[in-house]
Image (cartoon, rainbow, N blue to C red):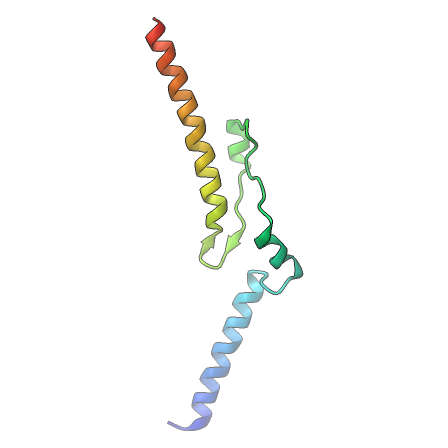
Length: 93
């Protein structure tokens, strides 16, 4: 295989990686700070209206898993609270 074909393929892959990295803002100065900072997506006393405002920052393979996990943990906790309240209400009747 001629050297210029290998060099051309390598250059094309390099350009593709740079374009993808730029599209996910991996070159911005905020990117390093964002990975270290954890943001609260839901307040502790969230409502259904707050759930409609939830957004996740895109990551290389979709959404940031730590943000999705945090929201799911908050939802699980809130659902347990409602389930325990409804069980207590049913038991009192």
